[in-house]
Image (cartoon, rainbow, N blue to C red; front, side, top):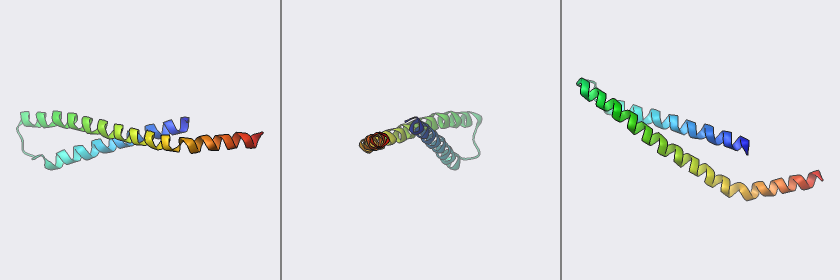
Length: 89
């Protein structure tokens, strides 16, 4: 199962980074270029908060979906392992 844990971690990381990029780009695209200093600071703080929340939610969703799929595949994996050990004997 170690390979699956690595695959899950890489997938969750990719989802998190991708979500951060998409949300950050969406905020940049919808924010006017000309702003006062306090407005720029507030938008940047809000961007950090929003991208963090979105990335966290997307990562949790991806992790939960992977766990669901593994749970559904577990009987097949167990059967494969049983057949593999019987073949070795």
